[in-house]
Image (cartoon, rainbow, N blue to C red; front, side, top):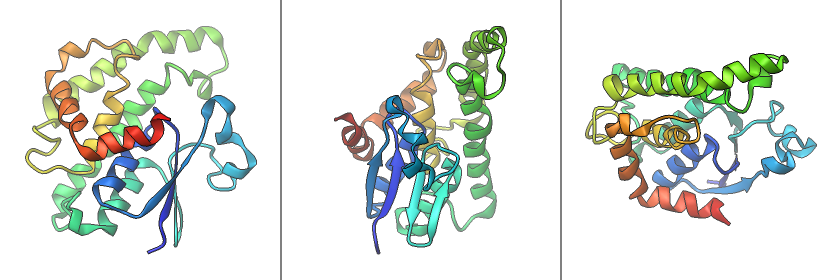
Length: 208
């Protein structure tokens, strides 16, 4: 197959898709964007993703965006990697429920720290949203710690596309002002992920 192209930027949720591609041994190439230079708003990238965000995955069939969709696409395209319970509709829906929670609730709570202007123009309102980030992220991860993370992976013994996504989002906790000592399961999951070759390769690929 023609290698896919993954557009990503360091420190973003696109890391989860990169890890999944490596887990699946999927042929791909990377296109790094420098957010400091606002390359995500360049005409060249807006032609790829008009919303100017990452990740974007260019395939032979077209371009896909949004992390939950890309993760499932990787799992379905490379079923031998066993990154999702593709033969069990209920468990697959559970996995999608978790990934969509990360996308629609946790990521939004995190984005209030640096992206408040997406929602309001008032500086005082932006500052108020920023002050709520530690509490909101702590609340989100309290639910993950208690209700979702079954260990050693999100869905127990079976590693899945939920794991690189949780790992990526959990890496934001300290900068968001969260006391991570409250979440020993999340920290243990982070350590297991850091030991994986795919994670180490993904980190190395954007380190330079």
